[in-house]
Image 1 (cartoon, rainbow, N blue to C red):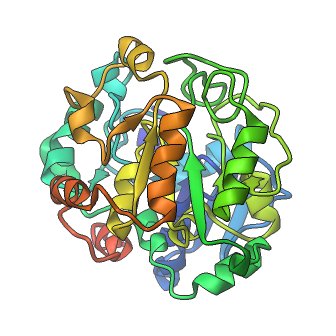
Image 2: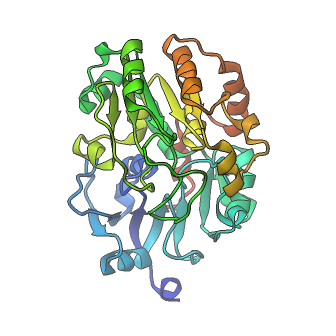
Amino acid sequence: MIVRVSPKRKYCFMKGLPTFEDSLVSLYRELPMDKLDKVIWSCFDLDSEPPFQDRGKTIYVRKGSLKELYYGVVSKYVMTSHGHFINRVPKNQVCLNVWHGMPLKSIGLLDGQAGREDTYLCATSELYQDIMARSFGVPLENVKVTGIPRNDLLDVAEPDAIFEQAGIDRSKYKKVCFWLPTYRKSVLGYIGEDGTEVDNVFNMDGFDHNAFQAFLSEQECLCILKPHPMAPKKHAPDLDNMLIIDEEWMMKRGLMLYPLLGVCDFLISDISSVMIDFMLLDRPIVVCFEDSEAYQNSRNMNFDPIEDWLPCEVAKSYGELTKEMKHCIRSEDLYSERREVLKKKFFKQVDFHATDRVLKLIDFS
C-alpha cells in the first residue's frame, strides 16, 4: 500500500543481478540525466567499482537496506533485470522490466512460479512477445518488441581494446571461445535444481581437465568460462588455455560480460538464453548439453521439441564437444543456415539499437 500512496520523485532506481547487469548499464549510459534528479543503483557490495563513467546524480545503496527500500518506493522510474520487490507496480510508478534474456526454458507462470505486472516488459520478436506475456501474466500490449539493451554491447568497435583490458594476448591464439553454462542448482535468486548437478564448472560428469587443456593447446584455442552467478561456487582448475572468470574478475578490470562475449569467435553453452543473443553476431555456437534429457524431465521448455529450436546439433559427450569445437576453430561454420532461420524467428530488429527503442517507451517529463 505504501508504494501506491507515496508521492514519486524524479528518481530512476536500477536493480539487477549482477549489480551492474549489462542491460542496465547500457540504459544508464543513455539516460536523459537532465530530466532526472537522481539515479539509484541497488548494489550487493558498495565497494564494487562500476564498469562505467559515473554521470553524476548517481548514488549507490546496499541491497536489502532501508535506503534501498526507500528509494524503491519513492522513485518514479524503476529499471530491473530480475524483478522489483513488488509484483504489481502502481500507476504512479513506471517499472521497466528488461529481464535477462529470451528464455528457451519456461519461466514465471509457465513454470509454476509467480508472475509480474510491470509497466513495460521487453521482447525481441512477436514470438517472444507472446511467450513473455504468458510467462509474466501481463497484457500483450505491455510487452514491447524493442530488443534487449545488453545486446547492443555485443557490437564492439575496438576488439583489441577489450582483449587488452582483459589481459589477454590475442595473438597467441587461433580462436577464442566463451563457455557460458547455465546453473543446475541455484543458490541465488530463484532457488531450485534442474537436470543433473555435478562437481565441476563444466556441467559434465567426470570432466577431464588435463585432457581439455591438451586439446586447447593443440588447437591453439583459448576458452574463457564464466559460471552462472546463481550457481554454487565450485573448484576451478588452473589451465594455461582456460580462463575461468566471475563477476569479481570482471569488476577488477572494469569489464562487462557482453562486450567480452562480443569479441569471441564462438560460444559454448547449453540451454542458456545467451545463445539467442549470440545469434546476432552470426558466429558459430556449440550446444554442450550432456544432461539434456534429465534437464527436460525437471524443467518445462518453451519449445517442443527443444532440439528444433537450438542453433546446432547437441553435443552430449566430451568427444562430441571437442568434435564440434574443432569445426569452429577451423572456421567450418556448419550451422549458419540453421541459425539464420532461427534468428528470423527470435529477432525483429538486428541493428544493435535496442537501448534507444527502450528509452523511447518512457516519458521522462
